Length: 305
Image (cartoon, rainbow, N blue to C red; front, side, top):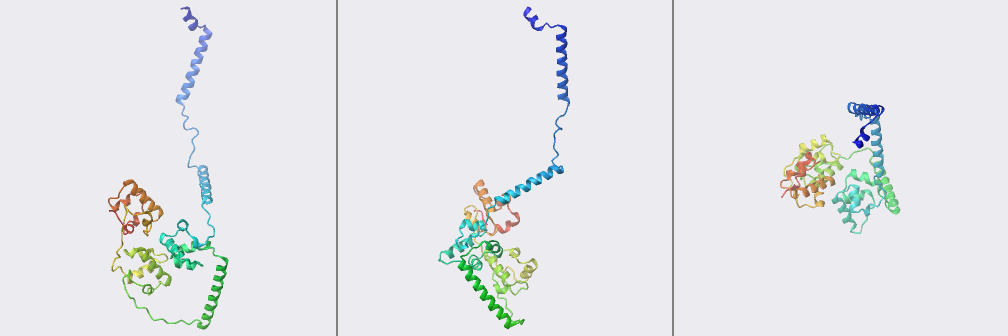
């Protein structure tokens, strides 16, 4: 009993102190319980200051990414490898043409020869040609040849003056767009030497036009000119295209599809690994990021077996 009294028996002053302490604790508990502190310190993410700060960060990120891009240095196009050609944007066929040419121990000495051998497009040639670096003696020889050509051209113009020579009108050999010749296409107003050559090259790349709309994909061919071409030339016989089995085709073979680039090729292979085997070619549409607008063209070259 004495033990309990020693611990729980307080005088009046002590009891008042304890009572005051309890009151203070209860007041603090009430303040914490009834006061909403969650709204304090919130930041409006749409405020002008935050938006400006975020834009500044995005700008710095873009600058950093630009700095991280690999720089392109002058190079001799005769020594382009598979890896280098892919970096430059060349197709597998264009790279193979170059490598086959080099195996004959011959060298390319100008950008014109490079295009003639590889058959790259004018767009790609203009993009990479500024980085071509040929030996000094080759550059000097090309300069002398060009000077001679300019001199001959100038003399020819001098003798001809402004006169024009009438040439006999070409007779179209075929109205089948898949059989027409380059000269046939040149009979259409607006289609010259370059455009007719591009139509032939693109037709070869596609293994023949299967859809009229494919003609509008020819680089540099304006819509109104393409429509004029289609008024004269039609798809009489559809091309016979050898389709690749999407379940067994190799990565390199799939890249030969004119409508499949490296990224899409990788997605198709990733999807094939996930499902083990495509039961129907329409499953390609299930691939995230698949270009649905090109489906009818892509499946011209693929089948699921």
